[in-house]
Length: 196
Figure 1: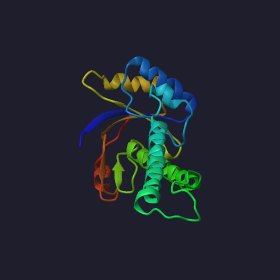
Figure 2: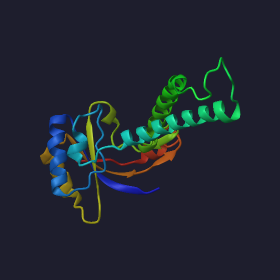
Figure 3: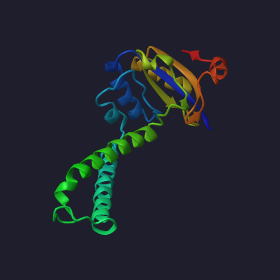
Figure 4: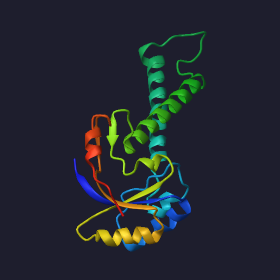
C-alpha cells in the first residue's frame, strides 16, 4: 500500500468550493478527489471527470439476461424436454416474454449495483483513509496530492485565498485495505495534523 502526502483544504460552502475546484485545475494542481456531505450537481464536470460508463455496463448486463433466458427456454422446450401441451408449438415466444423481462431486469440491476460498488470500492469489509471526519457532516474536503514539484506553502496559501476555512497537511493511504477502523485506531491517533 502506498502512503502519499496531501495538502487538504476544507470549505464550508459549495459556492466557495466550485470556483476553488476550477481554479485548482487551472493552476495545474493534482486534485485527488473532492469529498462532500451530499451529492453536488456539476462537480464532476468542474473536476474534469469523464461521464460514467455505468449505463453501458447496464445495457450489457441486460442483454446477457435476455440472451440467457431466451437461449435456456428455447433449448429446454425444443431439445431437452419438448412437450406437446394441447397442440401448442414447442417454441411459444409470446409465453417467454414475462420470464425474459424479469431476467433482463434482474441481471441489469444486480450487475450495475455490483459494478458501482466495485468502482467506488464500497463493501462492508473495505476500509479507506478519511481526509477529514467532517466530510460526511458539513465540510467540503479537497485534497491535493503533493509531488516533487509541489510547493506545500504555496498550495496552503492558494487554498486560503480560495476561501478554505481549514488547511492542513496529511499523509494518507490512497488505496483501500481489508479490516475495520477500530483495529487501525492507534494509527489514526498517532497522526499529526498541522493546521495552517
